Image (cartoon, rainbow, N blue to C red; front, side):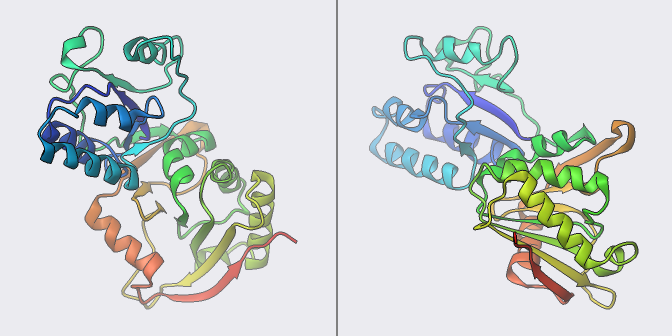
Amino acid sequence: MNERYVAEPSAFENCDELKNLLERMFGPYAGRYLAEYPDDWCKRVIAHCKNWRVTDTARVSVLLRRAQEQLAVVRDGRLPWDDSRNWITNAAALTQPAALVDGVLVARANQDRFPTLDDLELPLTADEHLAGTAKEYARASRTLLLESSELAFIDPYLNPCKEDVFRVLLEMFGVLAQGRCSRVVCWAREQEIVKARSVKQVLERLRQIRVGAGYTSEKRLEFNVVDDKWSDSKMHARYLLSKYGAIRFDRGFQEQARKRAVEVSVVGKASHDEIYGMYFEGRHDMKISEAHSVIVT
């Protein structure tokens, strides 16, 4: 989950190869991302394609722009680049001694230690079982946390008064604070929240999270308490939800004892559209018992 790959700008020999790579193998619906490496990677790809047919050259620009808009191709300032070295030498440095990327793709003319498009075999999605620690939750969702302008944490049992939930949210909000997100909405079931704590206590813990994580006061943080007892729509699965895609956390947003494994999976497009419609466009019949803005005072 959240795997990062880099591709040599000349790795594609025609427009269809580029289209297949960007639309089927990378992006939030795949759970893996292609980093712009170096930062002018898109310009280098366009330069490589300049001798293709005019119609294909135009398509390349459209494909790259769409891939950026849909988060198939993302910026990653953590990847070092040395202008005195060629692309492959730079990319090789990303793989050792500590791997900064999960894969490198090269042109067929440069096939040696890294795969080409002919060799690349990736599963449809990058689902995984991860250790149930706060850092692993943040790692698996890092791209959505950094790149989304608004996000929803959806979990019937989302109660930050519990220390195992508090630690996960604090870690994830620490990543959020570094990115573009300006609005977070947390959704929890009223019945589960009030069993042990009051909503007032939950809001206080959320304030502590935003302060501790550096999620600044101009960014919105909302908390919706839901009664779905008599609704056709139900809160059940636990998601991190963005307009770009969603990640399903099998055990919700809480650390697991003894690093017990957590199943984390990518949500497909059809399911994502339905979930997004429920939580961001109001297409549900659940009753929002309470809606709060969590502000720093």
